[in-house]
Image (cartoon, rainbow, N blue to C red; front, side, top):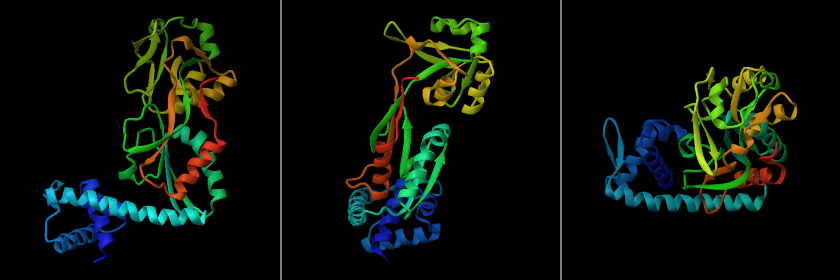
Length: 299
């Protein structure tokens, strides 16, 4: 039994609460992971995991061992990363996650530049409008827009974006622009459910939160479909500024109710916390900070 392999298998099973997901993360078969954990328990002469047909949980001994095992594996990763950092050439597989439109517009170009600079890296760009779990999904770096809730992640702020209400000039010529958020109930509303599942748009009036519940004429989970319908004069829509920046600059959409917008939302790069960040991750973060203007506040 390779003790480090067995330790890594145990930590993966504990983190992901199952042998099958741990096997997928490690690239092994479930039976191989089971054998590694069983061999570790045999060596330690104690049970680390309680297994049922539906779940896997830590024993008291397993919980104590898990903390030490994490530290050992972290030290090993740090030692390997230190050697890689000294070589100055990031290598390996880099997995980056972002929302669909932001990933296409902003992240994909910088990732192309990154690969040109670091030919020893193979990259994967995962686009989804849901927040992925970095550990479970094997993500190295993710772009998060909005307040961060997971304190276990290391974060670097790289920009900010507004929430803006926009409409096409043709639509605003037919129906005068609202002067107060409450007037939105008189307008045709196009709602992007990926931004907020419920059509209750949030504003700030007299310094206080002011939500407005609306009844959309069109609701969709596609950013592109939302914006396209608004550009065709279908109504007003709420979007993040980066999503409509080009259309606003080109005059296809116009911003309304700007004085009632909530504060801009931060844009962060997040990655699993570690005392020493792997060279491939550090190089990507540095490239974003060096070359990217991800501030979408002034339109």
